[in-house]
Image (cartoon, rainbow, N blue to C red; front, side, top):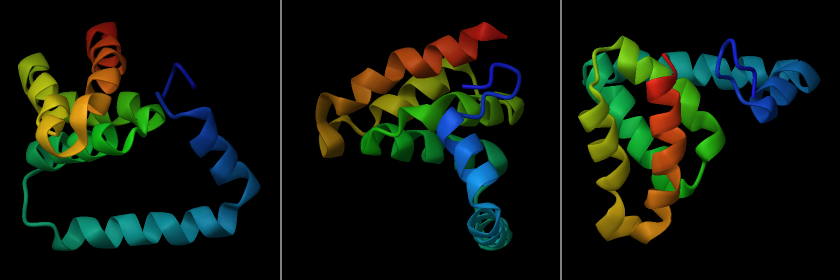
Length: 106
């Protein structure tokens, strides 16, 4: 993981080795943001919960930074991660330490 930007090595490799695919993917992400009815903080917290539920921990530090920049508290990040417990099971608890390390780093 790039410590300066919290972008995972996997995403950096994707961007560097498949720039065309990365550009198309980024356009889709930007398009989704234009139709999203939620505020940035809520969006970031929901996204953290989804990442935790799917076990995609490499993206959590970057998205914790986004949530924090949007005004999310440490308690809200914890709640977002753990909200998936009923649906995804205790898999989400494995993401909690990754999220809190990222939150507390700054």
